[in-house]
Image 1 (cartoon, helix red, strand yellow):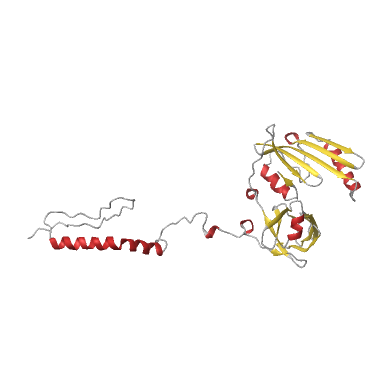
Image 2: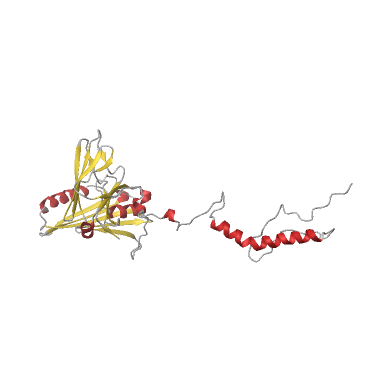
Length: 315
């Protein structure tokens, strides 16, 4: 009985080295008992394989992903691009007097109007309980015709009693008032607020100053956590509601002066009044009941994001 001949070429464990400028070993011909015809056949197969290898590679690339492969498309993938990421889960509404928005079940917003720079609308509560927009941290976002965000307005100081309505009024920026076309209502988590980096003054204090036409609020932080607030309010007697505002601030200053950790001052200059309030929050245990006055250790990003949504310019 003839002995079994050894296989001259074993291709079952063929591996291709994909490193650049490296040699791939695709087989081995054992010189013992070589058959010339067999050698020519093997060499021919190898030449054909090498000749068509580029075409095979291109064919795989043209077909895209290999079966069961995992491909990271990266941050520039079309799947990651959105027209407006901030509004990805909300609907734009064309602003008109006939617009009605179902904010939540039995909560309707209607009677939208822009008169000069004043945006107004009604929030109607048809539910069996009072509705607090601050509980879910609601914001109204205002857009132009190209879906560009013009202004963001916080609604967290609004509570609507059951079977009642609340008329909301807000003074828009000049640019917003002239370009407003669309709106949407959104809920924001604190985690959604953008982070900020505070600049230090010459004394090394981290300060955030928020201003509007009548008031300047200066927030002092340490490691982005709120330590104190200084509130400076000046109001001229040329304003129509001067006496009413005067009485409110005079009463506020008198009350705040009775709270530990707060120093308040009220000055009547004759043609205006000035109120100055300094709060050392670590020593203030009372609820100050003012949306501009944040608690001790509040994050800087919360103060900036929310105060800008109240019409202040913060820097």
